[in-house]
Image 1 (tube, rainbow, N blue to C red):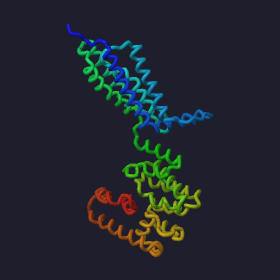
Image 2 (cartoon, rainbow, N blue to C red; image 1 turned 30 degrees about the vertical axis):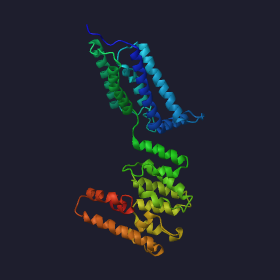
Image 3 (cartoon, helix red, strand yellow; image 1 turned 90 degrees about the horizontal axis):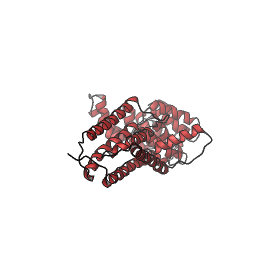
Image 4 (cartoon, rainbow, N blue to C red; image 1 turned 90 degrees about the vertical axis):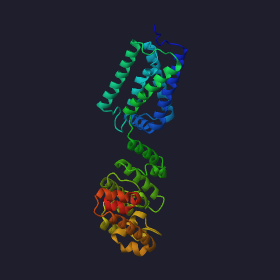
Length: 353
């Protein structure tokens, strides 16, 4: 008669290895990937309770939650009196809980869809049924460490996958949280570095970046927004324009610059020309303002800042030359052909948005 898998000291060693593997994943998931999200969830919970103050520590949160999940896994094996090689199955519940509690979407907890839960439930049941079938048929006959490790190393990625499926992996939302954190801490330059080269954005990201530019401007000429606004993809120009107009009513220092930026977002160069006052600027105009005035052939900009105007006029000529080379092609093709060289210019925005 063949000999089935039996519990042994090697089984204990296997449990420790799998425990350490899950603990490492849980800590990294909570601390490095979900720290900002968990802090946002914590702050919302505190604000709803009211009257409670506390300092959130991502490190402490990751350590405590990982320890709790480890104890749940150990409790499942102890209470269930489970044996055999399928140590990884003890981590189905902890993996599901880890994903469920990192699904905060900014307004509510447990934001998963029904299809996500159905998928996780189906995978969990399938693994348990398969393990029961293998155990009943005594198909797993080796009790050596290598075989047990191989089986569990194949199962653990499935557990991690369930966590990722249930957790919030919206990259834009995580960037919104990070930028908001930097802006709140007064680290405006750091905030403006997040997602600078991305080809996607959101309304919230646009407003947070505008806040950072406005805050930096208060320490300089009040025109930083004219140097940086179009460095980024803008998800909703009309929404950001309305936001800047509202901010302009509260900001005496940057009033004209904010209205000017809003006019550029609306591609209303006639409005921009009426707002423009050369006396607000010393040696140079903010880059994107000058590019807009080159397009509109603004005489004040040309006369007051001749060297800068000439440089940007040359850039505009080269942009239009590249644009005309793709004449007759579909609009999307023309957008893409100019994107690499000109996406961070107002010329590209004005032509294609």
